[in-house]
Every structure is written in structure tokens, then in C-alpha cells.
Image (cartoon, rainbow, N blue to C red; front, top):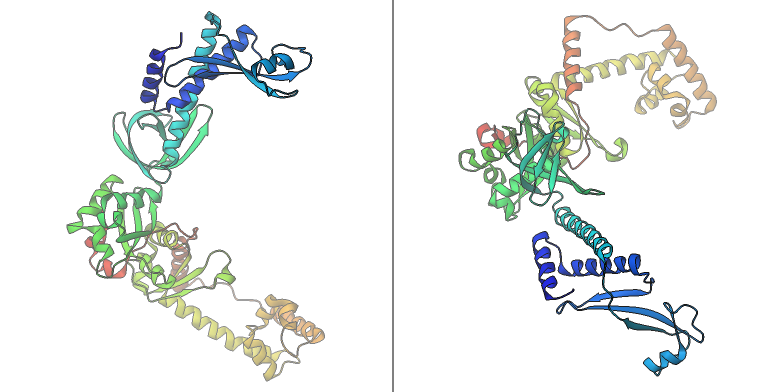
Length: 475
């Protein structure tokens, strides 16, 4: 029954399914053994071996050496064992070859089911092994069908899924369309590997740069960060490993040919390319292009927690450009740098400075009116940031007691006096003048542009590159 013809069939199946022949041999051995146990009552101590070259089938049983045999299937007497092996002793285990038995129809059917199941499992494992290595890479496929707005993509021996969330807004796919997508995740499921694809992930943009730009593929230029608002706009930060290579020019290509190919692949997404910088302030300034930045102040990481805060000051006529339409430019800059970006105009900063100086002057006068507060104590309070009664109330007892020379009693009396002064001098209501309304509108716009994202998202626009806008962007 088992012969070289079967060996040939196993090799053919292995080649067609992409499964190692050893896996199929083991599956056949397991199937035959399972069939034998069901139909012939073979015990668990039996194994089968299929010769890989000749196709000969051998059946072996392990038996324990005992003085008196109670179960012939599992045990062998010492005398019989010594006839087979003169060195046999009690409690040893011997492996004996059993005579062949013919398999009936039920046994053959059982063997067939086991083999098919093992082949399916092996095929799924092979597909999983192939695609798990492709996580974070681009794959090409053909749209097979659309199911509940999810795009099913045929990837050779497997199928991938682009969920509605991972599709570029406004992009339409039809069966038969060729598509490139980013392998987001590969999961093992009962029905086989599930391959999740994405057309919106920033990694797709970075991988497209690697595929289309030889300098990136060769490692001369590196993509350090990428940020996207899919289908609309993206920012990519690049750096060169060689001084004489312009990273932006390499990515843009002659007359923008290289970047236009990538833009078309992403449904006309506008792509800003900027030079990456290790300095956070410089990087943020470039990330906000095409707006011109007056100054950048990077906050302390310890004070801000996991994310640093960056205050960016721009000329008045650059505020709307820095924030962008619906805050898009600021959001992309924040995603690119991984920082909290707070944008203010020069006039707004100047107004805040004027108000603070005015508050300090008025606060000092108010402090001097409090009982028990002399000029020296006024200076100490001002140095600690408690330069007005209102600030003393906000600071509380702890802030006052932390001042040198101010004990618990003095702190309590100061807080009581400041609280009484604040009650007698309520804050004036907000002004409704046109100037204040315009300022409030500017603040609203600024709040819209403020953004916080995890570090390592990516993308930015270089000021120098923006002097020649067509050269540094596509779309």
C-alpha cells in the first residue's frame, strides 16, 4: 500500500502547498497511527515510521520488561525479552517491530481526515511565517472583493483586510484594482492568519520613500519621521549621512518627479519634506513651515511630564499660516516632533508681557497696603512669584511658609490679609471692546492649532526648502 508512488505524491503536495515534505511525512504517520488506534485497538505505546526514500511502513511498540505479563500489549516477560536482547533486565523498555495489518475503509477515511487537517494547519503556519516577517512593510495585492466597506486584498496564498478606518478618505477600490498597502498586524486565528493592512499609517509613507528614492534605499538619506493626515497633507523629516548630499533635493527629484509618484500613490496627498534636526527647537521651527518662526522655547521635560511643551512665537502675519487650516499645520508639526506645540503671535506675547508688568506693579502697591508687609518682604514675595494678593491666595499657606523668615503665624496672617483684600477688590469683568474680541478670536485659533502626540510620530517642513515651495512639496 505504501510505496514510492506515495512518496512522489507527498513531494508534489509539498511543492504545491509550500509545505516541507517532513511535515507531510509526520502527518501521514500520525494519521495512520490514529486510524489504527480507532479500528484495531492499538495501545498508546505504538509508533509508526514511514521510510523517507522507499516508502516502507514500520510499526513499533514499546514494552516494559516484567516477570509476569498482565497486559501483552504493554508488557513482555523477562525470558522473551532476553531472547531478543541478552542484556535485557526487569523494568527496561524494549521497542519491538510489529507485523503489518491491513487498513479498512473506516481507517482510511480517518487517515484522510487527519492528513487534510494537518496539511491545512501546516499551510496556515507557512502563511503566518511568511507574513509575520512583513509586518511594517509594504505588500502588493489585487482587490478581491468589498465586504461591509472593508477591502479584501488577495496577496497570493493569503488575503489581507483594509478596514474602513485604514482607508484613505475618499479613495474608492473596485475588484481587480492593484493596490499597495502597509502590513499593520498579522494575527493567528482559528481560521488561519489574519493580515491587517493600512493605507493611512505613516509607515506607508516612509516605506514608499524607501521604494521610490534610491538614496534612501542605499542608506545615504534617512527618513527620521513622518506624519500624515491621510489624503490631505503629510510631513516627512529626512536627514543625510553624507555632507555633500542634499536630503530634500534627493527626495524631491528632478522637477519633483520622485515626490509626485509618491503623492499620486496616496491620492494626491500633499507632502512637505524638511530636514531633520537633533535640536528640538530647530526641528519644531522647521516643522511649522511654511510659516516663519520668530523664536522657539522648549520646556523642561521634568516639569511637563512625558511630553515637553514648546512655545513658538511667530510674527502676527504668520499666525494663521503656522496654525494652518483647521489647525492642520500645527497638528502635523506636533505629531512629527512628538512635542506639545503652543503657538502665539508676537503681539500676543507682548500684550501678555505688558499685562504681567502691569499686574506686578499694581500687585506690589497692593502688597504694600497689607498690614505687616514691609518693602523687604514685598521683594521676597515678588521673587517667589507672589507679587499680588491674588497670587498669594492661589499659592496658599505652603507657598508662604516656604519663604525664608516667614513662619506659620506670619504666613497665616499674610494669607488672611490677602484673602480680605481680594474680597474687597473683585476682578473687573472682561472687556467687550473690539480689540479684546479680536484677541479672543486669535486665542481660539491658537487653541485649535495646539496639539499633543506621542513622540516618534513624524514629519516636518524646512524653512530653507520652503523658499522654493514647488521644490519641497508635492500635490
